[in-house]
Length: 356
Image 1: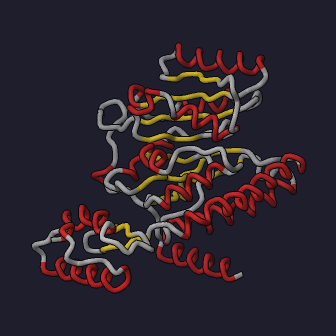
Image 2: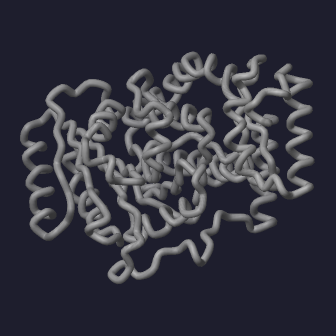
Image 3: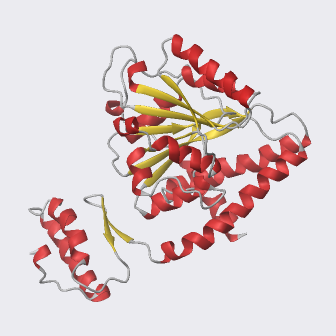
């Protein structure tokens, strides 16, 4: 109840102040046909036996507004049905003949489910040529401007690891079950994700309809197969490594809700059991995670090990202190205060050569 109350207060504050993530005018991209400043983006469509939706999903991604030489689409097919494999492969070939930079990948050893599929795709040699990766599940249909509305938020924000868009449901009025799901998920996106994104710069990745900085994925250890909620797992590990997230409530990606009770029950079992698995696995890492002391003037996060009581801690801080404007009296005062904090709480030697 306390959690819901705090989220409600945060939500009304955001609405009252009309707060939303914005992109600076000078950070926006120019016309798709005329500008060569667009970053390299990898788009992944993981799927498994998706006979009903594979065509519309591939078609929607292939119609994204982005220079064709700056985007690569990976169709990651884990289908066990050979007929569906052929259908998806032929669909990819047809779009490739139209000039799209798209490839079909199928794993013969299907371990790790979706996490294993994504991990396998990220191990390709050509991935190192790309800066960002957008993940869109097979039942998601992004609007053509999806990348234009998400990727620009990364410019000028080197610590931003994820931009998450909102889900929008095409079948929310199909029956009573879908209407109830819509109410529940609207609260999740409108309140939970938006409030946590604004005040904490952290929330659980929804597994799709998001764009990651590939460097953030790599530093977090990549996709792991240890739980059924690989999306939440990678988000927690990335945040523990200092990466920040942005949630865009105004950018929506179409998808479908489970219409039958059996499908809904299966989905909810995975969504509820997975986080408990993850909690047990991540709790030690969270308790021993780094404390980030923020220097507001310089907008820097100084990573300090919470239980470190030796001079090696200063080796982590030194490169960041060196980059501050040391000629500024106010900044020197902040550095002095930080040194006193280190001496009082972490028992480090202030005469260490690292900060001389």
